[in-house]
Image (cartoon, rainbow, N blue to C red; front, side, top):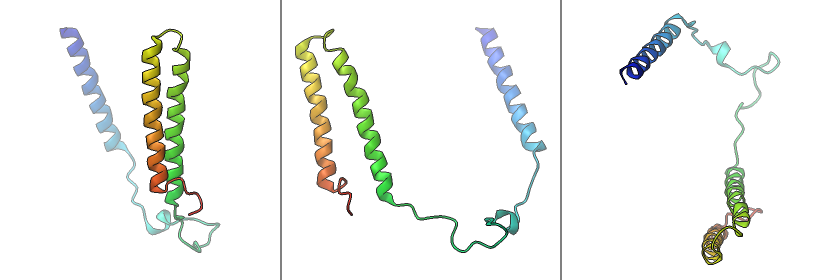
Length: 117
């Protein structure tokens, strides 16, 4: 027990020393106006370098990830049907799919599935 504690302490101390040396010896560069400005073929940029991001694309991505995880959870249910109690499997499957349908209804009710807006 003592040797594990001693090794952990040595590794921690060595890590801290390496991080401190890296911080001290790293090159300090002060960013000036020219280095921090965007570069477009030698000319000043015509417009802002940041494009506005539509929140609708973000919400579509979140909905896609949710349905993707749901599919990943439903597929193993089919495989374990033969190895489990059929009554418990049916109840679990119905509850799970009911929760998914309630979530879909909530998204539909909130207008998240309207693609035309």
